[in-house]
Length: 455
Image (cartoon, rainbow, N blue to C red):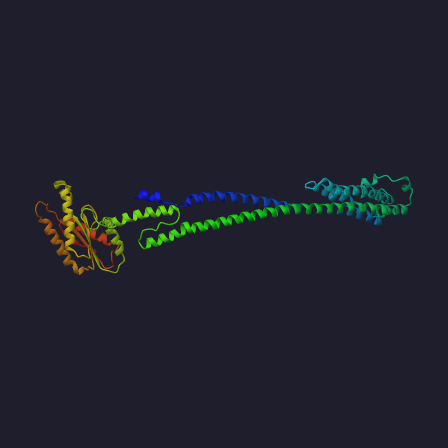
């Protein structure tokens, strides 16, 4: 019957859905990661282009600043004839070197030769002006003589024309000022500024073009991301609906069936339908065997009274209860000799006889149990020390029957230890009863001992 039901199972397999969804998700996530990496690179390229633009403008500014500084120092020298301006001039040329530094840094940026050529041209104009500037300084130095050690050799090495050499001091000063303040000098300065402006404008145009291209690429990439995210979202919604229909809803139905202790309704995915059919088969089998399994789980197979496991669970249940109980622990005296002399079959009969006597002589609310091979226990509920005489009579009665057996049963007896508790099954109760049992055995067996606190 079970095999026939298996063949009739039809439905969508969650395993197959998971495999398909995982494959689709991995592909989509792969594309999404690729698009994200591409977008990150486009963004980094935009940032890099902006940084290059700023750096290039800064380098253009360095050439402008360096050239203007040289012009300022040579003009101040021709006006004031203070040699400190000459020192500052050559400090810029040989130490600070802002113009040379700008061109050197420019090589590290992604700038076309055409654009960088404007800055090189500006530097060439600035270098050519240096010849006129040094010549002007040579004229002023000539007026003050060769004794001024602050004037570098670059100035003294400049040769004056024969015409300028014959000029008077006033004429040389006027000639020097004409060189650095004149229209020819100013035109050269304008060419420097013009080339720097060309450079800056070209950098701006190139940066705008690159930014537009990269912004367009970034926009396309982000559009791809949006599409991929939308597809993933739809896939998740679809998966969520499948989970509700194939998993959550059947689970809810199954939980209700289990709570009502009914067979499961066959619903949901292939796996759940298969599970329901299997469960129903087991449910039917369990229903038929439930009583038997429950009985076997709690009762000793030989004697029919509760076993050690049930006894221990009862101990836990009674622990901490505000009730008076008594615990009896009983051993069959010299049981090993019975087994050795009469055989194990007779030994089993003795154990059954003891169990039967315990059941017959104690109340239905008491719990006789077999807790070991020949060891028994009885939990007596609602028992106080005032019941010692009643318990004593019961033990003596049982021992009298065991010592006067019928037919071929051997004579046996019980050694008993008894302890009382007013707080349920205390931790020490079992030990107290066991201690009392030990004293009974020391006193010759076949009797009972009530536990008493020493002292």
